[in-house]
Length: 509
Image (tube, rainbow, N blue to C red; front, side, top):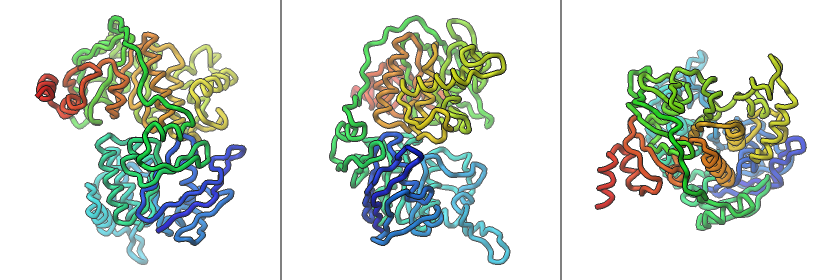
């Protein structure tokens, strides 16, 4: 199935999100749509999927003009979409999620044919090598598996054109590699794929053709053979530093000490196991490991979102393990959570309101029970400019922003006050190359002012380029703490549970 978008234009008030965009996707082609956050990529795909009506332009399938009044029309025409933020019901099973809206039912009765729904999941999973249990609940699945559910949902409805909107934004490196293999298999079977992303390595690894969008316009096409520097320049419109530029750290005495910290979850599994760490002022301590090895729980314990089963946390020599979250925030702890939608923002609130979630009780932004709305608005205008947050109005709901700009709001909020410890968990997840450069520089600046930084990331390149020391976690334990320049092979062995000394010996051989 051949897809053509001709002169697509979409406006939101005075904002032109898509400006006369032309795009052609051939059958069985992986066509990457590359651009910064807020460039208009997702808007364009929402037009294609029937979520928005275009103000100008035409959609053609196999040369024939089509009009979609909603996603149902797009699905009927053979188009499927996996959104950046999954459209799944947490309490539903995999089979129920796949069948939602298109449930196989008993004629005249309306009862769902449960066995048939289960069989659909099994058939599509088997065809493409997915490992999905139709009876598993969505809320119990890791993020990578939830994404496979979304893909199965689209394929079960006979999608011949599959839109993947930032599909790797929430995946680990291993899950990302697995998804790219799935994409290649789908394309080989004749499915056309529109791959929306801003990750240069992935584009070069999987795309057949690349179209670059900047500020709502197509600025050019490129081949996968283009260098990352060339693609970044096209995306941003300027040269981008793809490596972190930082000086040697000047650490001071420990600001935070983690002593024999353990956490046992509700299933009686020890998720954090006797962790000991010293985090110094003026250093970035990276926490490396495959996602799901206790890093998330460790971050939440540091911030007071979880209570440890045993152990202690010392801030400047004083225990804070029993301090509530609010007190830890007042003591200078900042947090960039890995899941911005769930933990980083209040979705119905405006951008301006989200920027003061951790300071709204201060004299600067409140007077008794009343908020100082003018000061909150002015603060948002200042941070918008300082952190290059792309938006129409700071009074708009934060949900109107692209994922990367939502992340910038969280980074701006946490870094706009004096910090003692910053816990940054997946700080550049879902963020484009220009914004990654900016956020990395701000983290280094934070370190250079004397803040202790704990960096948790599933991107090993990010851990190595930003960190001054790296602690590797495996099954809740710290396998070892090594210098930032430690070879990838050693880190990889440690991430698989090999003790530090043994991993280094294997590398020496």
